[in-house]
Image (cartoon, rainbow over all chains, first blue to last red; front, top):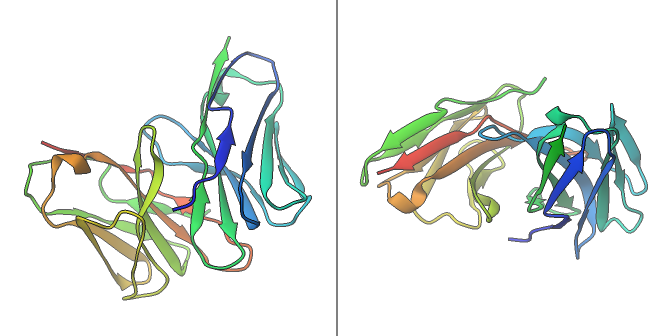
Length: 111
Length: 113
């Protein structure tokens, strides 16, 4: 099945720094979703995006649905130690109900 | 809040055993999914269901079957467990509406020895 290209694969940052990650696809998506997964747990939904150009925030997290509908971005501002985890994107094509997933970005925050 | 509940968090089974992984969602969602997650391979779709008694193969259905007798419940069955099925299994559900969102359970860690 299709996988989304997510980058970077991993990030090591100092507490307080901002973080950016993105996902790209060769296909046009009508939905972009961002999740955080802690070790041994299921993914938890952070932000859902449904319209091209849409910018949505959830606390210190901001995500954008790219204008081309082929990409999405997630930013985390002023990172804290509990931001540690794996972040991944998911998308849904215009047709069909399957979701496609990014390979994940592993975030480490150094206190 | 959407709740997707997986009945077993941790299981250890012997090779050749039949294994049942149960999943229940409480939001009347149309669509339900089973994925497995392995390091370096990401999430891979095993089976999904758009309706009661309906199922579709995903990317890696071999060695698995599913059952959806009721809308809220989607079961994954390993007919004869093998060591290469040791993995984290994730159940998910989605409403299937225009603004669709997929919600995951907590995961089931299966070890086959």
